[in-house]
Image 1 (cartoon, one colour):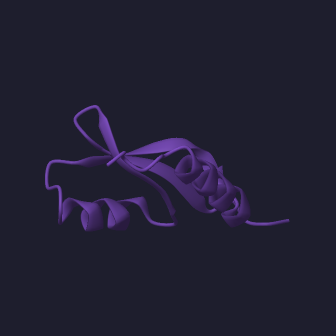
Image 2 (spheres, one colour):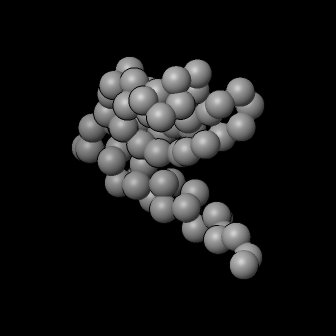
Length: 70
């Protein structure tokens, strides 16, 4: 059975989601994001999950984002 040690998260500035991703260390990842956005914060999405399930979630999140029109 695969380990459920991966977190899905949204990095937010106020109520705006700046980035969604996956990590195995929420504190470290939040500090990394805060280099660019010091007042931002991480919010865990759902429960810990397997790497495969987290990668599938991440792929589906990125497919819903469309580039801005010129």
